[in-house]
Length: 379
Picture 1: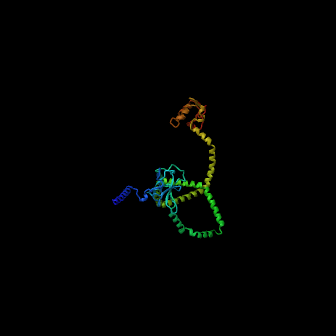
Picture 2: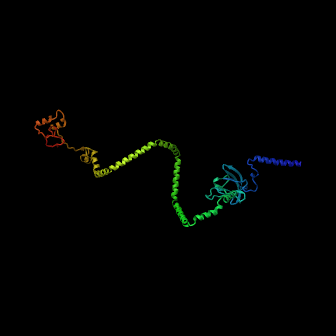
Picture 3: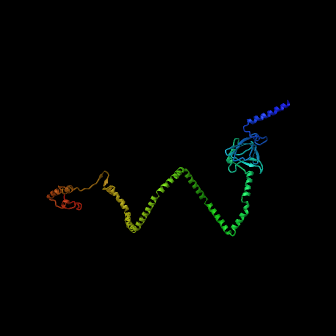
């Protein structure tokens, strides 16, 4: 019975272990189980997550430290895209800002890996790290591992330039031998050049900003640039097809330019003379400019001069003096000249005793536009 009881006890433990393993979806070996006595399991403990660029050989239950003091442990490691997502359990008394940093480090050259948490050094601390907080990938980094350090040292000693330091030193000594003054002058010029660059740094930055703005404008006009790049080959093809016509046009233009230059050379003396003769005319016109513009005032109110209009027209009445000639000879000259009745009224007036020649009439062989009118030439 005792033997059978031991068998039942072992069977029960195996069954319990199988049930526990099958019910735990996160089973990844014994290392995935929490170890007794590790940090991050006391009262008030909380869980955070950190994104790391790589975890190398970091395992569950690895230590989490703050200022070289263990304050928690790693409970889970998952792959998230191209980086790792590490779940961390911290003691309740761990007080860190929300923008804390996480770094994958190594305790010694051959020591174990751990995660180092610390406040940020390049920005002011913000908020507080609490349960469910996430340290983003931008706040994470890794220290060089032993393998990386040994690999870099091996590259330096085997494939680097350490073995050629003596050769390089000899070549530099040979190159600079007897050229101390030249080297000193070169260093002086380099110093001046650096000073000039430092003085012009604002202009260089402004030019870089302008170039950046230009590139931005070109980027905004990308559809236009693409369309232009597609159109330019067609335009070049048209120019290629019209090459002979363009060459002929350029040749004709050159001949025309030669003829124009020859014409100018032949007429330049006369042109200069005409311009000199035109000078006094333009000067007189400029001197008469005020009177010329004033005379235009007369034509705007013709036949009543505007400057004297207010002297004879006041209010609702206008003063007008007129001489009206109703003599027969005047009526004959005004209305019958050029008709078959021309001279009839003048002959009649002459029979009544009027003297020939007092009336300026075409009939009397005198020009009425030349002969002035006289008040005493009769009624």
